[in-house]
Length: 257
Length: 270
Image: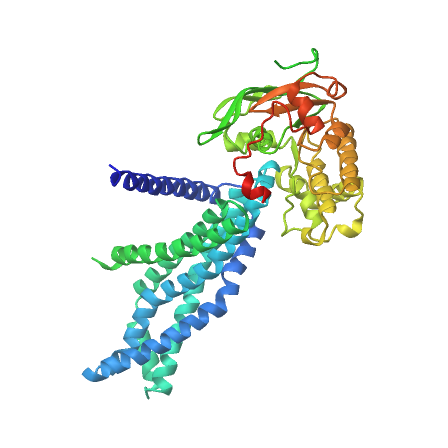
């Protein structure tokens, strides 16, 4: 009995969290489609999520593309398959590395910031104040962030894809001695619409998950500075884990057939 | 038990019956009854942790009671959906303990928030009203473009008050309006509260443990103890009542029926 009881409690707690999260997500989504809308707030969040993430996502993408080309070369040279590098780079970046790395970086940047901001609003009663001013926080705080995340992440990933492929090009041409024209031609030849599209779908899903986790943990934070700190950590960790899990699921849906 | 005064003929603005709220095994409000009449200023007093804030949050619809009923203007608000509750809250104004100003917005936008967001007042008009309300609480135009972080506690409270009255609400709620303020500023806030409630013809409900403040702003006082209203009556009868809880509380006595648990006092006192 003493062994089973904690196990049962743990399961119940887990199910409770899943339930609360589902209700939260459902409410958030429903408010994304019901007026009033706040275009100004959405735009502000899009700038926050997209524009200000460009440097960190760009840096991540370019070095990933560069190291990808370099590593592929050291591996493929053994089989004299160096010419496959443009292929490897474009497929890896557009399908996986672009969306996943951009998603993880944005989760660290934006998810944490959202959890901290909304968490602070919660512990300083600003969320209660919104309610008493007859303004639904789901509409005013959460929906604009979720909409911005879903719309902006694909754009961010497009940029990351481009920069990542360019990183591969830089190393291949300037270090590994590829012909620039051939490299670009091969890259374009190997580029598939489905690869890019699957990456963008992933990005939209990641954008949803990041903003949802940031808002959820912020919204439910308790107990002052410590609670806000915990909310921030939880937002980043849970968003990152969900990104990796959903990445596998989406990949399976797109490419397993 | 409760020493109700005869207020027959007055409209009841808020009618609470059998209100019960527990957090886990800890029962905070236990079958509580309270009436707040239209146009009066009622102050609920009680020690820390007696559930004053929980009572207030139940009335605002921020907490869902476990049992009981809260009627506002005859409309039951317990179990109301979020959209309907929003309609009820349009007629509320609330001053939070630490003002709870939106720190991403300027003072002017904070005061105008309810008007522009919930009442659909055009921004220009809302700003005009907001400036008016700011000057009513003694803050000039030069404060309008500042942000909450730049203000002192007393100023934040005044901005919070201006925000609460900006939409000319029917009912005003005040959560510990003088906590954290020096006595002079506390007096100023009290006077502003009295003035605002009278000018708007609103009903005021305040929770506090500051007795001086309670006497200054109330028409009637209710004492919350052990999850129930143990005494309610006009302010001038407060001193005369033989209710032992009230007697102990307003005189700050250690001896009496209110028992403070000292179970963990070794560390606290150490």
